[in-house]
Image 1 (cartoon, rainbow, N blue to C red):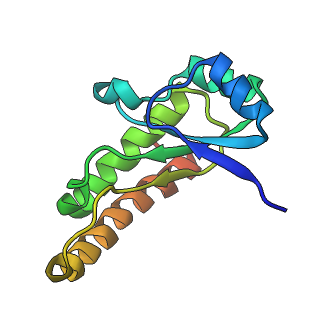
Image 2 (image 1 turned 90 degrees about the vertical axis):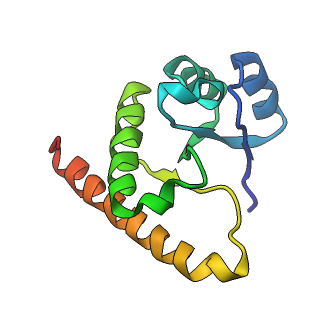
Length: 137
C-alpha cells in the first residue's frame, strides 16, 4: 500500500489542506522553526487546519545548511528550539521531529561534513533524552 504525502515549505490554508486531502494525500511535511523563519513556520492554527482536513503532519526542523558546522553546540540548540516549537503547536508527546539540512557538500568536504552532522546529532540526542524525562535544561 502506498501512502501519499506532500512537503510544503510555506504555510498552507485549511482550504488547501482539504483539497490536498481530497486528492488522497495522507500527510503533509511542515517546518517547526523559530519565529524568525515565519515564512515557513508551522503554526498551531495551520496544524489544526491540516489535521481537521484528515491529514497527519510530519514535523521537520531545518533552518540553514550551515547549522551542522557548529557541531554538538548547534545540535543542542536546535533540539531545544524544535522542542519549544513542538510544544507550541501542541504536537503529540512521543511523536517524531525530523531534522534535515539543505544543500550538498562537494566531494572534498563530505568527510568533514559527515563528522559535523554526527556531532550535531549528538547534541540533539541529549535534548531528546531530557525531553523524554521531562527535564528542562
